[in-house]
Image 1 (cartoon, rainbow, N blue to C red):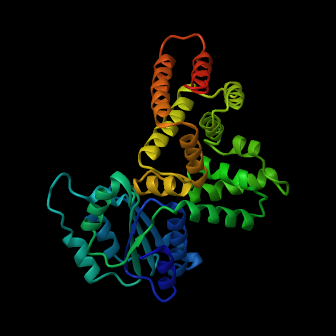
Image 2 (image 1 turned 120 degrees about the vertical axis):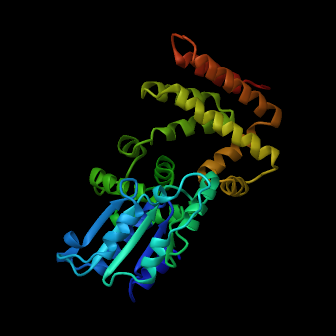
Image 3 (image 1 turned 90 degrees about the horizontal axis):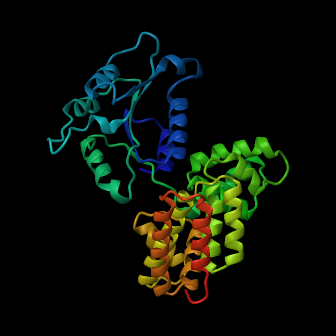
Length: 345
C-alpha cells in the first residue's frame, strides 16, 4: 500500500504487524508519527514505544518481546529497524516461521513495525529489496515508501515553503532541489533553517549556498551549463568563483565529466527534448531534475557528437593532470575551458 492508503486505513484500526519498505524518509516519518499517535496516548508514549535494531538482536528475540505483556503499558508500538540484517546470507533458504506464527496470533494492543529502509525500488538495489520482500512475505500489511518523482518533489517543496511562509523564487527553488537531490525530508529541514535565517525577506542563492550542505555544487552546474553553451567568458567567471570559494577542483571535474557523458548518451539515443532526456535517465535509475535535463539538452545542442567525444577525452586528460604534482589546479581547469570553448574544437 502507499503511505496515503496507510494513513487512511489507520483511521479505522491499525494492523498488528506492518512492513515499511523503501528509502523515502519524509513519508515514513509522517506515517511513524501518525501510528504512534493512533496507538499510544500522550502519557504512554515513553513507556509504550520500544525500538530494536536487528543489526544488534535476532528477529526471534524481537518477536519474543512483542509476545510479552508489559507491566507499564497496555498498548505498545515495537519498532524493528534494520530489517535487512535478519536475512540469511548467500542462497540459504528464506523462511520465517516465528514471524508467521506471531502474525497468526498477535499480542492484543501491540503493533509491530518492521522497517527495511536500506534499499530502493529502482536501480541496482531492486533485486535486494525484492529478496527482503520475499523474506517478510508473511506480513500482509506492507507500506512502500518510494522516492518522489522530480515533479512531485518540486511541488511538495513549493507547498512546504508556502506553509513555512518562506519567499522562494523559481531559481532558488531549483537550487534547493539540486543541492538536496530532491530529498523531501532534507528539504523540509532546510526550509526551516532558511526561514529562521531569512525571516520575512526573500531567500537568495547566497542564503542557500551558506546554509544548505552541498549547495556549492550548484555553482559547478553553472560551469557545466556555460560550457554546454560554449560560453567561454561565463565559464571562466564561474571558475573564478569556485576558486575563491575554495572548491575542490577534482570534484568540479567529476560533475563536468558526468554532464558530458550523459549528453553523449542522450545524443546517441536520439533524445531531443529535456522531457525525453529526463524520462530516459529516470528509467535507467539515474534520477535527474528538469533543470539538469535542460542543461544536458543545452550541451547536446551545443556539441555535435564528434565534439562531445573529444570533450570527454579532454576531461579525462584534465582529470589526469589534476592528479599530477602541479603548482595550481586552476591552470589545468582554465586550459580545459579554453579547449572546450575553442571554435571548431
